[in-house]
Image 1 (cartoon, rainbow, N blue to C red):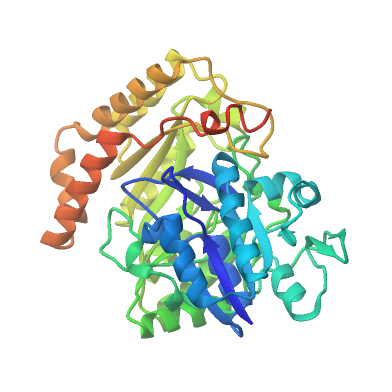
Image 2: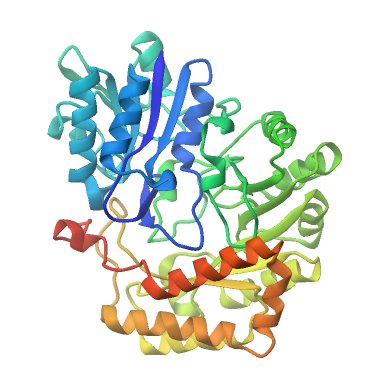
Length: 442
C-alpha cells in the first residue's frame, strides 16, 4: 500500500512528538519519534514521510505533495493546541483520496475511543505510539492496541506490544532538516527503551505502561545501517537511557565493539555508577541531557522526580569526570513555584558544572491531569527565564568554553543565528492553551 506518515502544517511553530506538543525551538528540532517507529513497522509498504514542521511547508504545498503521492492510508500526528487546524487538513485529505486515516497525538492519548466518536471521518487512533495497530489494521483489518472504526462502529483493543518494530527507514525522512545545537547535520534518532519508572507530574510518559526494551541486536543493526549511510551522530531518544543500568551497560559494550558512533542521550541521576558512565564513554557518549528542572528539593519532590538536587550535582560531576558533556534542562512555572524556588534554581545555575542549559516555562499538556501552573505571572516567568540564561551563560569563562561545541565555521554561524533567534522570539509564548481558549486539562 501507499502509506503516508504525516506531520501536518500549522500556523504556530510547534513540534508534535510522543503524544505531546512543544514549542518549536530555534535551537533544536528532532525527528517525530511516533512516525519514525511506525516507519519501522511499515517498512514493507510504499512509504512516504511528510514532515511539514521540518520542511516548513504550508497547507497548499503540503496538499500538492500528498496529491502527487496519492496515499491509500495516512497516519497523522495531531496536537491539542492546533487540533481544529489539523482536523480540517486531514478531512480534506480524506475527501480527496478516500484513504484510511489514523490519528496519533495528545488528544487521541487522552480521549482514545471518544476521539473517534467526535470525529467521524477518522478511522482509528493508536493507544501507544509504538503500537503495531496501524500496520495490522491495514494488512488484515485486525484491531490491536487501538480504537478503530469497523463497519460503522468503534471497536477497542487495549493490548500492549513489545518494543520490536524492526529498523525504520531513516532515509525517507528529511534528515538534514533536523538539528541540535552541538552537532552539524545530519543526525539520527534511535529508540532503545519505552516508558519510564518515574511518575513526574508534568510528563505523559508514565501513562505509556510498563517499561519495555528493544532487542539489542535490532539496535545494533540500526546503528550499522545508519553508519553505512554516513550518519554517525545519534540521539538516543529514550525517556531515560539508563532506565536499566545493567541493560544499558551491556548495550554500550556491544556498541563499543561493533560500530563507531557519537551519541547523545537523556539520563536520570538514578541509577548511575562509575562503571555505567565509563561504558557509555567507551561506546561514544558525547553529551547527556538531564532534566534537573529546579534547584528546590521541595519542588523536585512535589514533581515526583525521584532524586534530589545533590543527586543531580553528583550525576553532572560523574559525567564530567569521564569527559562527557552535560546539558541541564530547567522548568519554571510548575505549581508550587515561587520566588524562593526560583532563587534556589539561580543559585544552582551559578555553581553546577554544566556545559549547556535549556530553560523552559511550564506548558500544560493535554492528558496529564489538572492544571499545574504556578501563580507567578507569565511576564514574571519570562523575565526569570531570561535571568536564568544570563546567570549561567555570563559566568566567567562560560562563553569561552562554548567554543568546544563549534565543529566548523558554518556551524558557528548557524549556532549564532539560532541563538539570537531563540532569544529574540522566546517561542514559548503565547501559551498553547490560549490558542483554543482554555487550559488543555479543563
